[in-house]
Image 1: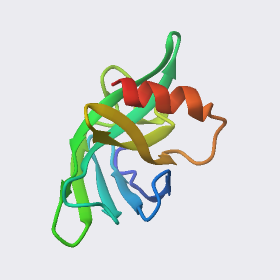
Image 2: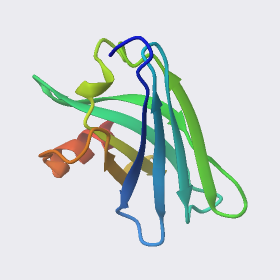
Image 3: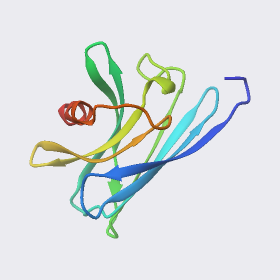
Image 4: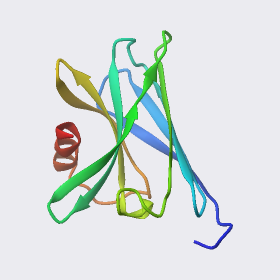
Length: 134
């Protein structure tokens, strides 16, 4: 990217859980970036975690961005800041999938997922099983 380039995107998240929906607002500059998660329809007892996923030589791996905070109205959110040139050794462009998993009784289940850089070919069963394993 050129020094003052700026990218702004709205990533719509597809739901795997009935009644839950959301989006991610991505802002990227050369040296810093942020992702703001907004999820509606979450229960106050839901334990939601955000992940950034990429496919490597040994299958899908990811970066845990953190837990979404849920308020009493069913709205959940998280703001994550990062260096887009180096997210655990890879650039932001190398991560095609963003996901939200829901932890229930010690088990993780996929709740929401979306594309970071536009539509791409993804084996969702492998990607979501790797997300749940994290």
